[in-house]
Length: 167
Image 1: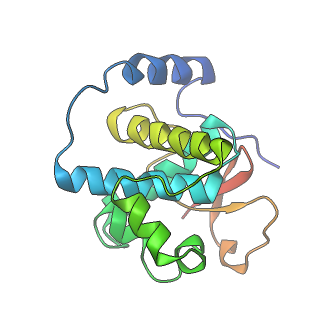
Image 2: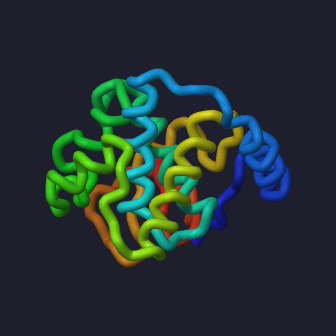
C-alpha cells in the first residue's frame, strides 16, 4: 500500500489551513452559499467521523469534479449527479432540502457537531489554496468498499478512512 504523499508537508498543510481559517469573515454570494451547503452535506454524509484531513480530501475530490465540468460545473451539480454519491438517494428529500437551505434538521447534539465540523471543512476547502490531493484526484471510496471501477485508476493514497484515485 502506497503512503499518501501530501502536496505540502503535513505540518505545513496544517499551518496553512489554520492561517486561512482565521479569514472567513467574507460574505458569500447566494450561489456560493448553495454550493457551500452542498459541499458541507457531501463531506458530512461521505466522511463524517473521519479525520479532518480525510474530510478535507473528500471535499477536494468534490471541488476537483466541479472544476473539471465533467460532472456538471457546480458543486451542487457534482453532488447530485446521477449515481455519484449514495447518500443523495438514501436520504429523505425533506432532510436534504433543509441542509441545502442552511438549516440543520438533526436533533442529536453529536450529529449537529459533526455537521458543523463538515461545514467548517467545506469553508476551508473553498477558501484556502492548501491542498491535500492533486487536482486530478476525482474518485474515492471507503476502505471497507471494494469497487470494480478502480481498475485503471492511479491510487493517490489513503487519507483517513478513504482511498483516493486519479486517472
